[in-house]
Image 1 (cartoon, rainbow, N blue to C red):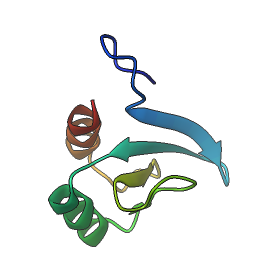
Image 2: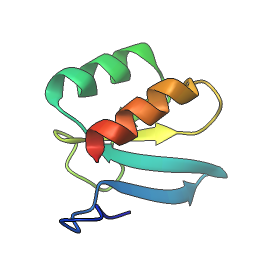
Image 3: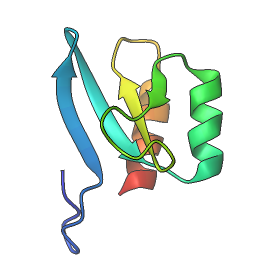
Length: 74
């Protein structure tokens, strides 16, 4: 998905291992916090792991936190 104004990518959405994954860009504090709190938030698949997280949509990450991570990436 691309930002409406600057057209930079802010999220990658794809299917892997039978689940939907979303890659989002994040600052280091958020990156580490969400990776620590949720086992379904991991270093980004096929992207720079310093700046991107993958959210695995397996039902274990609350919708509000998913929304927050997408908003931060946007």
